[in-house]
Structure formats: C-alpha cells, structure tokens
Image (tube, rainbow, N blue to C red; front, top):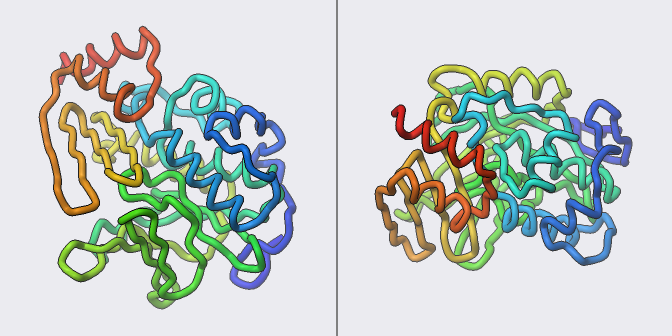
Length: 286
C-alpha cells in the first residue's frame, strides 16, 4: 500500500517482484548480518552496510555480451550463491526483496544519473524508498563508487556520514537529488529521482536500455566499483582508480591478467574459470 506521493506505508508485497523466492538466510549470511530481523531503522542501516561491504557493483556479464536477467532466482544464484556482484538493477532488486521479507514497506523507483550535470537523461538507475521508525528512508545498494553506505531520511537537507564520507539529499522542485562533497566546498549531484513508484515492466525496459544500448557506460567495457570506509575503488576495463577520503587519488593501468585478479582481490568478485577465460579474450580483442 502507498500513501501520499507514493511513499510506502504498510507491507503489501506485490508478487510481481518475486520476493517470496528469496532465500533470506542465505542472503543475510552473504552480507554478514546477524542482528535482529526487525523492520527498524537500525536494521535497515546494517543491512545496507552489509550489502555494500559484501556485494560489489560489477558488469562482467554485460561487458561479455551476455544477457542479464532480472528474475530473482537468477539474481540470487549469481549474487548470493556464486559470490558475484551485479549492477544497480540486480543489487537493488535483491536488497528490496530482502527488505520485503524482513517486513519493511518498500517502494522501487527509477532515477536519472546526473554526474554533476543538470541535463535530463534517461531513467537508468534504481533506488528504494523504505519506511522504518515512522520515517521514509532512501536506500540504494546499486550505485557502487560513492554510493550510500547508510540510508538517508527523505527530508530536504538530510545528511549521512560514514567514516569520512558524506552524502546529502536535497529537494529541487519535484526532484530529490543525492549529492556528495565536490572537494571545493560545494556539492556534486550524483543522481535525481521523483516519488513515482515503478512497476516491474518499467524496470525491465530501463534495464534493457542500460544493458544493451550502444553508448551505455556498461556496454562494451568492464566496470567494477566497491566502496569501503577508507577508500572508493573504480575499475574501467584495465584502468584502476582508488580514491581516499583525504582527497588522494591513485591511478594505475593493469594487464589483463592483473585485472582479473583485481576483480577478486579488490572487489570480492568470484569468477569461475570460464568467466576468467572469457574476460581475457575480451581484453585481447580490444
């Protein structure tokens, strides 16, 4: 059930999202969550932190030209059981299913990437609105590099800080904008969204665009992202960038073999032998 402006009010899991298929025990084990399974703000923060720590943003399958499914069985087989990561649709649909099962009212939304700009782009990102402790929170496990590590209250000017990283949510007319400090005393807009609940078909259409359209940042190149309390890691093909909270940035070029190792060692992405061989062929052909 949704209240004013589509905000989640009560738990009413729509079967189209397939949350009943989730192996909740396996998911919570994957993210290292051992706390109370109660729909409180503390649980929400801890689940999101656990997910961000354990499950990376990565597009290995898309880069290799494989079809990526949004079927929940396929998502949990890949992200929970196989030790892989996924991109925003996979990560946030998995998180949403877990929150459904934990008793949180959840609304799934689509967002527009900004990357510091105000021009209007396709809605290609996913976010979640979650009700806990009589407040509505923004949760997002799918942004990867510089993504939220804890949920943000859906309130103009709300901020969240984890270690030395900070995020802010601001209202701009009908849009909500998620921002991070730009390093020069200002704010950098990462993405914006409106409180318009989306259906599974909307996710499928946006996912198809993001995972197949020439020109998509996820098509034709490898992308992996991981954030910790101390650093943000970004891999684009064989270029590795590590940003530290004090502003330092390290960049280096890797060999194809080093890139495959980095996916495991720096991003926690478990590849099987077939995946590794396919990635080496992918880099050999670039």
